Length: 397
Image (cartoon, rainbow, N blue to C red; front, side, top):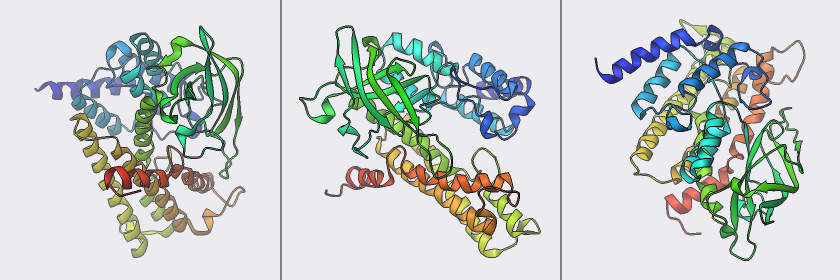
């Protein structure tokens, strides 16, 4: 038996023994595990599952073991993900720390920072939010005005951020600040980490048309940040910011290659059969059937393209511009999914509340509204198209 075959056999056995039965079902919104100080354990099995996976390093299977990871190879990680999908296992931990900040820290942080923050992220002990966008600056990220002034043994931060997702639930923030105003705007930016419970930090949720408030505006009023919480070099934070944006855009793009609806696990084709009807196991209406099939093929093609891009990245034969291409297509594909779904649901898609509409119908309508934000967060679709035009196609300004 080959080493990989042995790894698969051992992984399958471990998952069967350690993944609770309730963790092999679709994830309700109130049972998503973000970790951190404020995590509410609606289902006790969620905590058991996260802790078991974290103990094995499998919340971040490719990270080095010295930072709380599993130290797996690419092939081993692929097997792990296949085995998790085989039993329909829930994600043990969702985290901006895993998706965005962690990869940047692995590349730019000092050893002390890596051992502290990466380990806490891997164990689900800390929940992060992102402090990038600012009021009045739109997509001009480098135009940020939040300042961090050198006060000897610490920085004094003043300013405001907007669209800080889940800032009211986060423990810490990774934040871009201006530390030099006498140089070109890209050269005077630094990358700071600090506790959201620091004196002078306040958050205000932003109500969306979907009824949810994942976004916040965050204010900093004379916030003291110790100097050892600076990542990388002073005034060189733009390099870290760009790399982290690549990870964010790759993370957001992933929603476009999956026809499952939100965390429900329900497939687009299953919903079509429910609302349009089915005949001999197929969607009854030929036009809807063709539409769903086309969407499914685009999903699969996108998944394969993402996989190819990942392999090219591991081989060092690609650059960060792929992230913009993936982010643009993935978010647009997700929006198209919900547009198709509302057409399929017909009048059942116009409900907001009341007994005439099932919870799944109401949630789907709200997810349709929420999907509009996908083409804004992580850099608007217009910004991604500009990146593609200039850096991929080489078109003139």
